[in-house]
Length: 197
Image 1 (cartoon, one colour):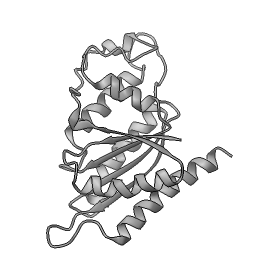
Image 2 (tube, helix red, strand yellow):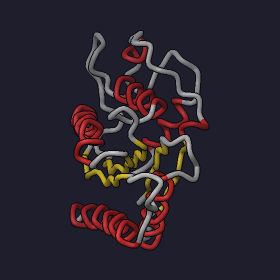
Image 3 (cartoon, helix red, strand yellow):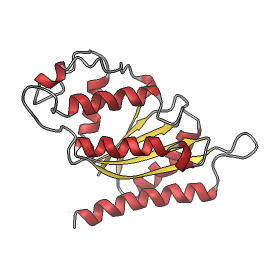
Image 4 (cartoon, rainbow, N blue to C red):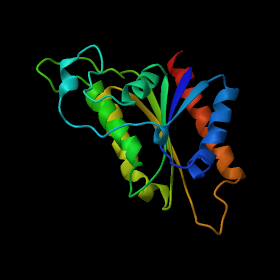
């Protein structure tokens, strides 16, 4: 089983990376392989809405030549997509939003003269986020967006693991959070195992 982690944080040693590390350790202990794509290291332009992609039914067909196709291929080559992001202004970071916009538009051939396939159909998605508010308030819109993104793309939404940063007076990561995110990784693994029986 292979994961494609889409890391949407600009900080390689920030809270999101800290939460992701024990998740990936648990995944590895369960035999899952992971590839992490740091989106701030890639050039992924916003969608132009030009619809050029809709004339290509067997591929992306995006008119822009940047790193989008490379990242999309990593998504297409995995079993579980794991977007990981801090929440800025109640949604994901800008590189993550640009990627998801283009992936759902170029990846769902629904808008052209001829209806075509959903290129990520059948993939699973399990998300990780950090925010400065209670998770249901800080990441609620992001989670709803992911659910709709999955539904539109024919993917299975497996859940969101989110924890709040209480500020400089308290460490972000503690034993309870490490165990909880490991439990989330195990729940994802168990869900896939149960579905394949």
